[in-house]
Length: 132
Image (cartoon, rainbow, N blue to C red; front, side, top):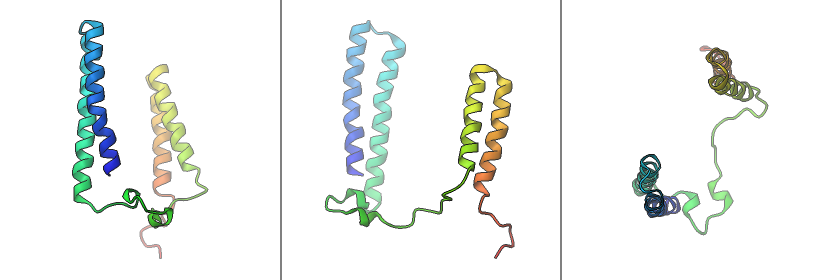
């Protein structure tokens, strides 16, 4: 996680510098100035989290400079290659966000379609409580 920590850590002084330049050029426009400086704080939080997590866990295969693609091989989970449920879920999310612009009644339709897609995706491989 060293590379990720360095990237987010380097963003902190960058956003502080950009915030100072923004403050000078706009004569302290309050919303943008505070937002850019808070963005520096958020990048610092992510960098600290990655630093603390990287010290607690073992090195990942991605952190080994001499690592190969095969060193990251292994089981990542079980995914259905021919499932339509992610498409249904995405359509529900699209209609839900469309409802924010068009009308709140459309959000209800999107939420129902999204809920159906979510339940279908979660229980796609379920065979019941007593399945063998």
